[in-house]
Image 1: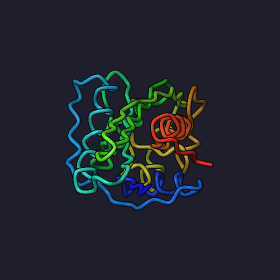
Image 2: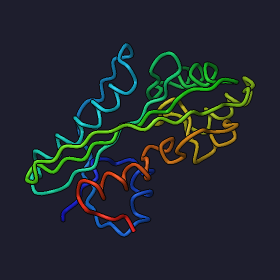
Image 3: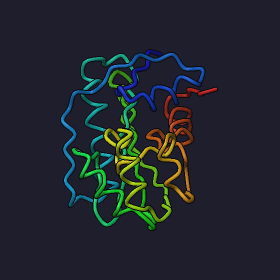
Image 4: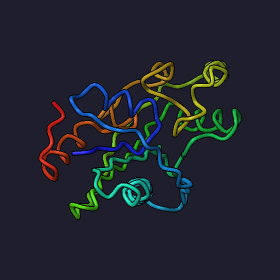
Length: 190
């Protein structure tokens, strides 16, 4: 079966490449509009579905995998647009717990299958000094990540603990993906 990952995220590509799964990379070009008033589950599932649908219409013979990740702390935090917005997000998250939501969509038009689901993970941050926040933002790492941090990189020192799926925080909940692929497409990641 032809499989397409509708993402150019290096993290998602790296995560999926570790399994026995051949796939093409075809990033979605939809504009990622998040209404901060939406419920987080609704927001990430809708965006994941829109990304998968766009690529599926162009490739109806393929299984398309798409996902979208947000950070939620009383409001949806997307990717920062400036260094100052990254610092503001990190100050908001400092010393608190928040949730990371990833919506995942699997669409195979020729098989008439559309599956959309969501995973939530709680992330607890250390208390962060302004100096640490400044140093971290200067690395550039926060700029392409929801909530302005990457748990798999330098941002790992910001995190005190998590409750839930670590890979969800990276942007691709592998356990959920594996279950959905097996249940709906009879595909095994191993």
